[in-house]
Length: 271
Image (cartoon, rainbow, N blue to C red):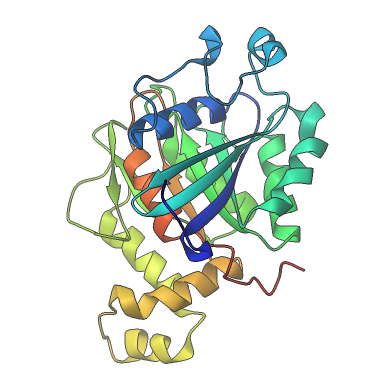
């Protein structure tokens, strides 16, 4: 059994409106991490998180479920929460147990009421937030409109750390290892520049090096200001995934492991 210090632990609540695909996303992440050999399905009643008989009968979560697994030296604890409006109180009651709230949004339907309420609740509690746009492979999904609506509702600090490519069949990293690969909209260069511009705003010395002297910043230089930007709500990462095809899952796990805070990283806004 692996042993972890608190700096290797990531506590993350998956929240969002019913039908956003949270339970399916958990299954896909567990498969990607090598925890399970076959992905369960909500309609078959064999998902890891919806294990209760009533949940299987209703086809959606009624209570929160904790799923823990290891990934690249990190211990990731996910809390899969109910998504229907009747259960908002139950979901809000558990998010204070985590450092990060991951808001899952259905690319087909866009931002719905529960997602808005969870974004507000997480902000009020001073929690780090990340937005996951799921079901990017759906032919009727308008990803540009969805991202624009997210930024209109929650602010310009919502910036993509990856972008969909090849018709939503994969995603391209814009932060960890930016490249010249083509994307379905925007570009890696533009997204990378927006991320760096946003992060350096919390560090005057880095801002001077980057904006006035034109110095290229290393990941090591960006690490602390990035964490500060996340803690202060100055940056809300947006990622793209498809639980159905597996697009973006490896990248999402990397974001969970490398960007999101651990329990030892205090948040001055939290209490």
